[in-house]
Length: 148
Image (cartoon, rainbow, N blue to C red):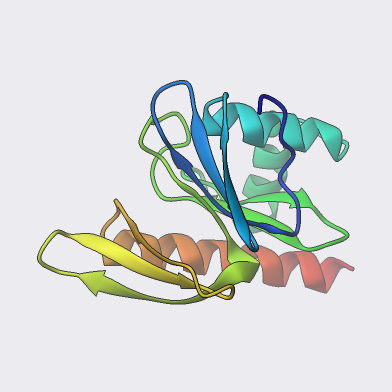
């Protein structure tokens, strides 16, 4: 599959390699022949903005400057956040509304993330970084809700 738009069913997007991503949705997973940042950028356009516009909006609302969470689709409260720099080929994008819990894998300095569909994934990010990114995305969600 070459064309994918992030939506309310999107749970997490992980890199398969430099040119492909694995998209986990509620009940299924698929390989997309695009890097994750391309999927994010295209999804921003489909929902009426650009990646740059979404990042500028997040900066304005939150004051954050790097590894920014993004509103993809406001009407369905679709907010995603990166685990690393969005330009990193090893970055994973996580949908805030599907995270049930997370805990550290101290042996490997990674994080286990449990999603509301029962999926448990080990993401290649430390627990502290994941927690910080989760909190940044939660703060963005709060700011958006206050402005509705």
